[in-house]
Image 1 (cartoon, rainbow, N blue to C red):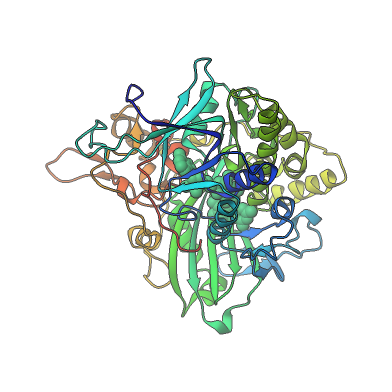
Image 2 (image 1 turned 90 degrees about the horizontal axis):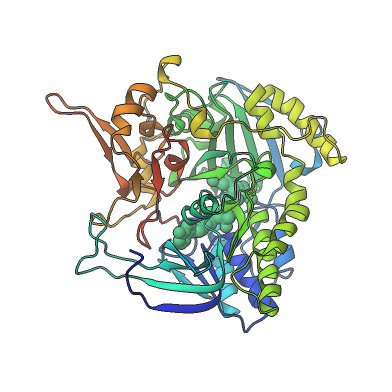
Length: 549
Ligand SMILES: Cc1cc2nc3c(=O)[nH]c(=O)nc-3n(C[C@H](O)[C@H](O)[C@H](O)COP(=O)(O)OP(=O)(O)OC[C@H]3O[C@@H](n4cnc5c(N)ncnc54)[C@H](O)[C@@H]3O)c2cc1C
């Protein structure tokens, strides 16, 4: 592919990904100098099509970027007015009072938003400032300069043959070169992964950790809807099988975001995160809210959970990693959008300074300093031990010791120092023989749904004749290693039913990848116990088409 002749376009800054991080960077660059040439490339069919976030938004990122966001019509319409936290048992719940929680957990002043819509609005602001935004343009390769620096990306390759070769209908795409390239691909970015490996950016840091977030939008009975209500739960149905919990956010128009996160460091390969989510909705408290309503959308996405100690070095020659390509989620708050925005702003300011000083293609170290010692670092440092304490000692310890640690960190010290995460999530998976299979109830089609029916509510679409974008390093591993050792967990951890082991009488067992179903969550790239699957981007415009997630 690299020998293909392509047209090249020159920019000051090339930004990959139109999420909150990339769009904030674009806006800030143009605020600082309207003459800068800035381009944003987005693989979704439109801005927002691949954004799945919740979300309760802490507006501190927007405040810093555009203090007049309210006058400019930002779609932050639902202030949080009630914050509930429950521990669930199978048939009941205990309300955890708000007063012992450290102040950082308080949602007062935050908004329930569709991040897809917030990104659409941010894109309009960016375009008004003169940023060029190209949706439907997947960035599939990095372009390196003579000195080994990142100098650009290849975007817009369409119509490859099934085996990856060029055919009569192939469009080779183009190279977009920049003085600096920003990778704001979100969690487990495919180009960011290459950059982290090439420049050894994770060296000396803890491994990145992840969760799998699944979400449905429900329209509920108006009598049960309480605009502005935010609820988080822990406990049932996961119990001690895995860390995680749910979120239920009442937004406008009688809609409710119902989401469930499963930490991907679970040991039992029989665990089926999607079915845990479906089962959760049958808890009497949740069922009562949803009964009589209808599910209107479904999606899934990994969420970064390593926090402060897992952030890789975020700059290398010519390139900077932004937002969740670094991993900037504050785990106990389940919030990363504010830090994504702040990181975009910080990267833009560093690049602006460098370009004014006639620099290009070098490391934007000022950006890294800003992230680690500024607002983002402060936000993440306070909560750095919550996730590893949870992983090591379980939910109750995490509530007590993690809570204590957040309090002491708020006062400026920690009794624990910095707790290590240990293994990465793939390595955390144990052999199937050590664990019992889990019996999940069949979805009832009213509150719970089978996976493929739900995937159709993500409006996912992939051109079928292109190469499969899920690359196996060794195609024998799924059946020769993962099946006997781990009961091939890809069949269960994928929230879109991409992976199947097909056993038919009289035929050889087959491992099938229905890549057309992929919702771009990246879980397979993270959780495969043999680390044999690499997620690369399919052609632009493919993937989910989320309405207002
Ligand atoms: C279920 C769930 C719930 C969450 N809830 C909240 C919440 O309530 N509040 C909160 O603040 N945070 C929440 N988060 C975290 C939040 O979503 C992230 O912190 C945030 O999305 C990070 O922003 P980003 O710009 O770095 O990446 P993203 O928002 O993921 O945006 C990345 C963009 O880049 C595009 N892209 C990726 N690769 C390429 C490529 N190669 N070429 C072109 N385009 C590409 C993607 O399509 C996407 O549009 C939640 C996350 C999940 C999964």
